[in-house]
Amino acid sequence: MDYRKTATILTATAGVSYLTYRAICHDMLSKIFDRKDNDQFVEQKYLDWISASNAVQVKVNSFDGLKLNAFHIRNHDDERYMIMVHGIASSKSSLYSRAYEFDQMGYNLLLIDQRNAGESEGDHYTYGIKEAQDLQIWINYLVSKHPDCSICLYGISMGAATVMMSTAYELAENVKCIVEESGYASLEEEFAYLIRKDYKIRVTYPVVKLIDMKMNEKYGMKLSDVSPKTCLENNEIPILLIHSEADETVPFENAKILYNHNKGVKKYYPIKDTAHYRANEDPDYYRNIDGFIRDYM
Image (tube, rainbow, N blue to C red; front, top):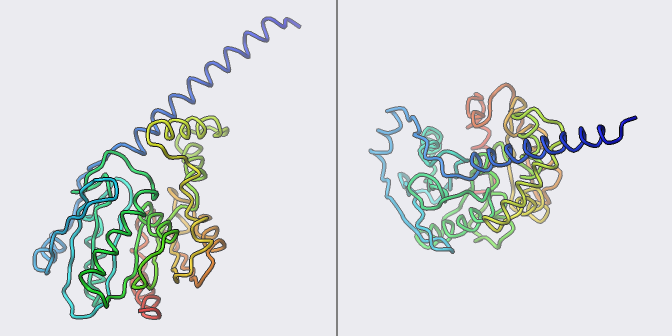
């Protein structure tokens, strides 16, 4: 056997693999952290509803000095509120159609732009770490305006991670329940899944490790810091977990993991045949959410 030839081939293969992993890491970092002000198409019906609503634009300062934006919509004398939290690469406008339905049910609303989105400041996402602290500020804002309000935290995808991770903090007693849709249980596991799916490679550890190192170097955060399932281990706020069995962005298995980790009252609502961020297409979606919320506020 020509050992020198074999060693050369192995070295070259390792070099190519490393360059490939580094290229994937760079591509993923730009996709998953950079600001994405994608225009959100909103049907005129919902724009008209916003215009006709008692919608007040609100700004607060984050704990680290960013200006954050929201719409405070109070169309009812009822003290029931939903704080609605969008996902990555979107903004509060992506929630208008859902907010309209909840308004029709009698809920008042706080639609927030997460940091690095919409009209809020920021230059990168933290996938729930700092966003959960921002959510505390929004909760406190709402309680300061309406001390007797009852609050449901409602989040989709990264917004779901935000509301789940907020349970690691001492939230105001006004927060009565949580509705999370299509949330990931662990960012590390989610990124490994996306690498396998989008880049067609089986060995994900090197890329995940590179992303982790770059995240820590650039943003001071680690993948292991983003773990909604860990936060739920001490959660006692009733939670409704919604997930589509056909979700190809955040796999359905995440809902099972989150359900099993949650400490307190929980309800599981699986949906068939809808894509990520489209669970509201299920005909029973709003009825089931309303039924869950009414048990607690």
